[in-house]
Length: 310
Image 1 (cartoon, helix red, strand yellow):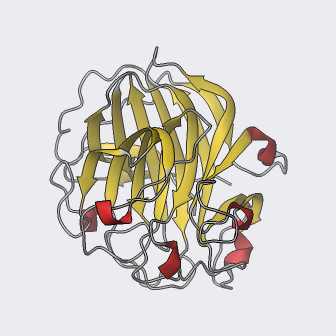
Image 2: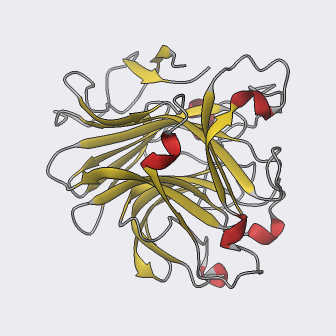
């Protein structure tokens, strides 16, 4: 089920117009056959039996929202659930982004951790499809991770005490990815709008939990990544939080996933099996969009349409 809303923002950065957009891929996960649309990639750099064991990863493309476990939750239908101890990415099969035209990837996200203090991320990006999107926060935490592509990540729990809460990263195989954008959720974002304005506190959240401000936790958020050649624009609920330039044209497969730099302290989601990091996505849309005429600040009181599940 899909719902359309109009969001009024006092100041926002304009996104490419939806008028004349060409849909390349759409998945609302309602047909029961969505699993076949994705190629799943786990982190295999850690030995089986240790933290980050790929055998613990799972992707449920027919996850029922009623399983979120709150009787007051009025949402219906299904989405896709990710569980992992380390890093797990689902790449869309059959749609290749070749850099020849502007592409927008968008989806609805619900992050459902029960942890406090661990650092869990939702990622969206474009990559080779051979390596998962993953991120280690600082030099002392770098492991043997390998990642390939340009991808954006947002914090899905309540830990906002350090840099790296919102990032855009570029990975080229082995070693830690390069930061193209790095922001602390407790401070301002790239365009000077507080994350508290984009993601205000909700009490309670959609499934009954207390929802802090500034993070992608216990709430539905529309996430998008627009690719313009070597340029990537990362947006939450229609507000651009990062506008970066990669080392070259951004090409490959669109992917969505989760990662946890500190899985040893992860307390997991509410849905078994735990202690895996958990998130849910819905309404995946990949489309060709017209070349934007301006990416400057829009007028005060601008209106932007966006998709969001209720």
